[in-house]
Length: 318
Image (tube, rainbow, N blue to C red):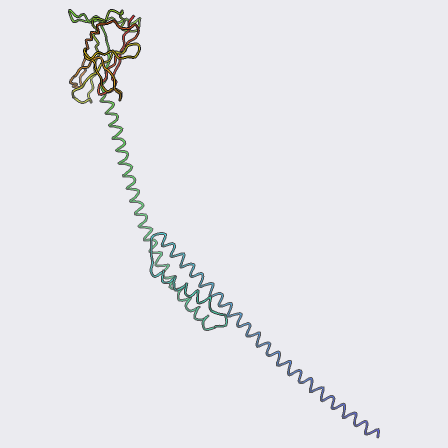
């Protein structure tokens, strides 16, 4: 009886051992299978990651190409150059960039096509850049030639301007040089019977000095128009003024007085005389019979030609 019990226990133990081994084997099989699946997934993830990285690199390269093409177009446009081939390449690169943005990392064929197109465009762009470098050099040379021509034109314009300025300056100098000058003013008592003159120059008292009655019956004013070699030979009208101490011009229409334009305004003159100026010095005489006494004080004598004051003198009444 005890021997049968012992046998039963051995059989039970063996059965349990078999069950245990079966369970362990199953678990090992399951573990091995799961581990293989994980490895496969990790390999797939690695491939996807690599493709996504490859796609990202292609996208960056395409965007850089678009940027470079745009910069080249802008550079040429700044110089007034329009390059149709460059414009076409830029449009193609922009289309490729849009295609790249829509591509996913798992699409191996599309990524390969992107890289192929990119390589082709990059090569075409390099060639175009080389051609444009020559074009840029040509344009730069033309620009330098234009700049040189412009500088020559500016220099010529400056020369012309200087010549015109010199001409104006010379004309102004000549005009001033042509201006006539009246000098050596004298005034004396006119002796009507003999038409002679008694000049009374008193240096100690400041010039020609007379009493109030001395000039009432007649005064002779005399001055010289100086010689001028560059003045024109032509008819001139010389206007003479006698100005009293109150700065009023002494004139009488009945005695040859009147109006004229002097110093750009209407003035009166005491007498006038028409002459033919021939570049030589000319002495003029004006015999003025006022018929009244002169005011005590300093009187001025002015001479005008061509509307401009050309000389002055004075006399004193005491």
